Image (tube, rainbow, N blue to C red; front, side):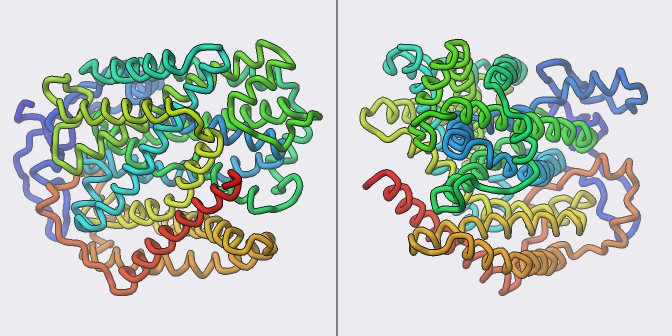
Length: 564
């Protein structure tokens, strides 16, 4: 990369310049670790030159810029409606009609808040999420976080191949043909050595996912019930431990920890800088709406598949839903199978890449889609190994595929609070984000979201330990504690951010918009170390222990539901 390219990706020279006293503005060096992450933005639908720093005054130029930048937000969201998502939403429809549609509306702000924070982290820091956690909180916490990610992501990749297997079985194609061919295609798509080619391939699969729209209208939607269920919370048949597990699975498949790692690293790899954060925010909001609309379409189809039949309330797996829909109309069954296969491919590509990005972050190896195989062997080999191993596991006969899929989504929901806490701490670290740190209202909203997730996991734990307990009462009691938990997290984050920042907020407010758009995080080695308060450290340790226990009890619940 030519030396004239500045750390903000705007083409400015990297030499230092005088700074006003007391102001932490542009660092003279960049924190970007892989030089392939610096240069022109090369999107599926356009290119933005590294030296293009002009204002976009006309709508035409803004739309062209958005077209070039669009991708990370939309791909992460469509990838979110993966095989596990299709299965989970279809199960909700088949077992509870459309009564759980309200959960999707509540998840829109969760999606936007979480992913907007990683948008800023990616664009401002120029390094991946795993690397930031490792460097700012120490290798111990880094390995806890990344260990969760590696385990959960691998299990999620297994569910993607389960989706491919189920779609193939519906079409009468042998698993031993469909799964290896899909695995080879996934590796080929990634190993092109071109970010633009990879993103274009992803957009082809995103275009295929539009089959959700005819799927919705051919499923004879009951618009009155759908409208009520979107705005009035309720659970058909009442609250049970099984319904709570499914709600957590909906949360886990809609807002999964891998999304944080993927979008941040993909933004870095696409070379998006603070100058274009507003465009990437729009990309993320658009993707959030797309994912919720798609989930609703699948839930309605699942409802229609089993409505007024003995199959209602007896979900097996996604292929079963496709066969039920085919009894109404062969076209419906085929559309659902196509959607399942397509969702599995997009999900597998995004989740596996998320893991490979994190692998590169942790071990300090080259990890960019701009590099070819020969130039980043370890990066591509880690991707290939995960794909091959996950595909091999799915070919083992006799596994309860539907239950595995739901349990993995629920595990994602249980681990999300831990990932969200680290995300919140990073977004309040002024050493990392400078003038881009969270506003107070955003911290409050994120704290409430974490508290809600903890209430859901607590309900699941209680119903697993005490199967005959009143689920509604447990949920109400835990909800009463929500405000206390949220306030405690907010206070802890505020105290920690004050200790970490060591910067005067009044001075931070003096940074002009132009300076803010060019601010990038300095090299990680130059940042002041993080200092946690004893209370925050105890809180994080308690959260970790609680979530480990939750995961164990989730395994117990899965075995109970599977008849083990």
